[in-house]
Length: 387
Image (cartoon, rainbow, N blue to C red):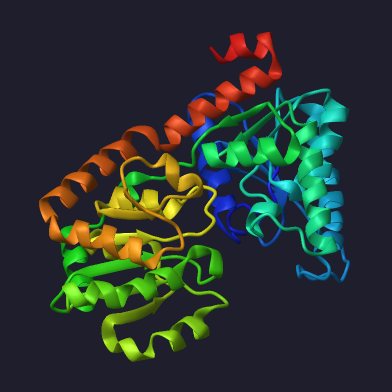
């Protein structure tokens, strides 16, 4: 596996994904080597059976910023290739698994050296992140690398049917397979005392609504805020807790001053505390405008919360949630009000969601499906070995 982030270097969800998937593949009997960036950790280590090879950064003064992103990526990939070549010289993998566009050159080079196929996971696309537009040269350059990766890969993995269709449309690719993201469901089941403490802290006298997201436009936080006055007319004590940080924080806070304590800004909430907050909620809102998958919805379902999600993107695959039209505050308010009026029905919906997550979205299930994609990509010999 090739990844630009891996514990302890975590930037977003990709590093955690690679970590959990690689460990589960090893537990299933596969040999896995992750080649990734260096840092404080030693260059070679074994992490729960996963061999990890870390590439040292070259002494080039480049920042990971918009202006120098491509140059930074080029330099990073040179280091990654140099770290990986000694590995494949002694040990030939059946498949090279590339996670997102930042490792495309490394994956293509190693595929040519080893004569082994590439499997690529596209976690999101540049066009999707910009609502179909590629407004600047950097955006178009990233898009071109994504296209290159999709065409070089023997198989492409996406996390949802929405992303499968987006990748197929953008890159004219017909070799795309859906393997959903996974999570550790047990980690999101907070003890009753912790859920009670979260409710005591945040709920007040009325229903508790929770939204956990990065504070950026595409997460649709502004839609939930616009829906809150409508909800409070029927449920006067309703409170919305927003957990997360991001560049729109000041703008969003300013827009809710007239609502007083109806909105509480929790900022960054550590995972164990977030599990308790989600589990304490009468409804968890996921109002995204663009969402390749919607991992927070899985987390909320695992925590046992009733879910209201925008009918968009990867959220459409989650058939255990109440849905509303995206970017429609009135529709959001109506769906959430329905959950609050019918508490027994909401709890039944939540229980069904929790069962589905524990059955279909475990890392064991994700690893099994991923190994099947590897076998398809590598051909009949590898497929027989996998079986």
